[in-house]
Amino acid sequence: MSTRKKQSIYNSEIRENNQSADNVKEVVDSKNNRSNAKTKTKKQKDAELGGTDKKTHVEENEDYKIVLPDMKSIEKSVLGSIVGQDEQVRQVITAIYRAKELKSIKANVLIIGNSGTGKTETIKQVAKRLRIPYTEEDATKYTQEGYWGADVVDMLYHLLDKTNGNIKEAENGIIIIDEIDKKAGNDVRDVSGVTVLNSLLKIIEGSIVELDDLADPFGEEIIQFNTKNLIIIFLGAFKGLEKIRDKRLNRNMVGFAYNEEHKKTNAQKTRFLKQDLVKYGMPEEFVGRIDTIIEMNKLTKEDLATILAKSNLSIFKRYRAELKKKGVKLVHSRKLYDIIAEKSLTLDTGARELSNTVNYIFENIIYEVLANPGKYTRCVLSPQIVDDNTKFELS
Ligand SMILES: Nc1ncnc2c1ncn2[C@@H]1O[C@H](COP(=O)(O)OP(=O)(O)OP(=O)(O)O)[C@@H](O)[C@H]1O
Ligand SMILES: [Mg+2]
Image (tube, rainbow, N blue to C red; front, side, top):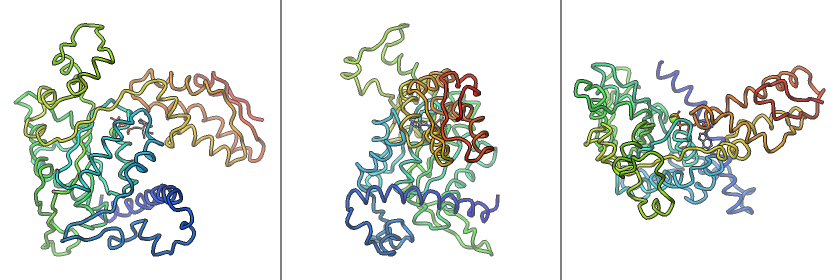
């Protein structure tokens, strides 16, 4: 894809992100300062929205300083979307604020968790609110022979694309690298994974990487990209890592459950440790650079039901709002959330499966409502609708 094309896609994304960030900001602002809300000048509003870098960022000794919103209000707002991961959300926010405000460390975070538990979504929700540009990378794509070094540098180009070429902003962005566990390997014959991890070291450690300035028609200009303030967040499911931890804890007896009291007194030990990751096959040099390891919770049936009923990301809520827009009130028992949650839980993809189940439920309803404008005002869902999407009544 050409840079220009990528940029125009990015621009529309940014507009979307800005709108949602705008909403959040407005909520926070109206709470903090109700009387002021109406009297804001355009200039003030632009500054809040990060219209240009001059307004949002104060240059300090050539260092880039981002003004972060109140941490607790960000946490609260993210928890309105992310369910069942309160401690994890807090850990992510703390890692980012620590890196941005204290700058004493290079923030390299590893998030371990099953599919659909909110690894990617949590970072997106935080980054969006803090207006930090981010790029999502899939570690498994960085394998082609001969491309190792170059590919890792591509991540920096992607980030630069996201900021429309603003180098200072890109240097302070977030790179999310998914499926990092697929690069582990104890097998010395499979050097590709380890090679990718080692070539990642230069952006993990913080160094100056020289990039060709793609805007220069003569291809002579060089951009120096300093990776010292980049936040790198690795994601992975790390299937089998629990077994390694269990072994370390001598928890390998079948059915032997650690009670809550034991967990509390051994909270540190029961976390994943770097040594577990090394045993798993991650190179030591790599693991050594990780300063925060976060383990996502497995989502329970109750969590999934709460996502449906309450989360701002709930696809069920979105359908309810769409029907309301067409003048149709949605009626169902609270139990329906549990039934959908239970059905979705049978597949091992966490909250990911919810959207499939919910889309199925509303397929015929949305068709009927759109095909008969103004005809209906009420839609009653039967609990059986999760298995048979004709089980509803429109009147
Ligand atoms: N804890 C959660 N709270 C609310 N919604 C969630 C949560 N986890 C996941 N979701 C929903 O599921 C979708 C997929 O989640 P996400 O992309 O974060 O999964 P993931 O943990 O990164 O898994 P994968 O390894 O499959 O990428 C999200 O877009 C969101 O709608
Ligand atoms: Mg993901």
